[in-house]
Image (tube, rainbow, N blue to C red; front, side, top):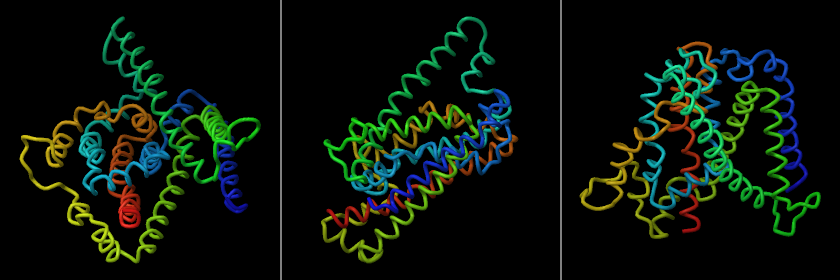
Length: 318
């Protein structure tokens, strides 16, 4: 990496740090300010923060990889969440905001009584707050480590402060994230989410445009895919064609996703980290619009630059 590249990274890290410091006083005003930003967030901050939260270092790689494995339709693996998003927009989003709670676990003791409610709340906190978070954070950090090693040009012999360079970098970034989160609460989280989403989408769109230009545009992309032996019609298919359902095939996979998986998911109610943003919306209307913007941006805007990059990768490397 050149010095200008390093300067950009340093400036970004400083900005994130300053955001945490700037919002620390506001977040320390009360528990409600810290956990739900005083219930004052507009819909566009709510929705953008939700999209950014599902945008990790590995997300573009997963989407491009799905395209390379079988075509655009493979993204129904996660597009099916959009169906549940419709339910959440028009039913659950306003209810989460109306509940006037601070965490989704708090809802359990409002809905149920006695010892069973306390046990269920404790179990949910332990499972989702500790076990599941450890697994998710681990795979996201593993993906981030792989990206950092390639971008920085490091190898196993690279060392910073007597530590492997990739390990040091992950620990540093993790510490910075914990610092501004603890310091500024949800205020710092949603503002940095907004900044990160804008930067990440700008980079994704630039990469998609540059990748298309590299292969000479859409027409040449199609030609190169054909030359490399790909069935272009299958690659560009968004919904797989009808096939017999007595055996596993793309059509049966599609049916399972849109008929079963979307409603069988624990995220169908928009709870967890999504609900945390809904609690912070300034009104029920803003919670509805926020979830609507999140669903639209996640399904209709965010993935397409990565899909284009995946197609270009297939055309270039076969």
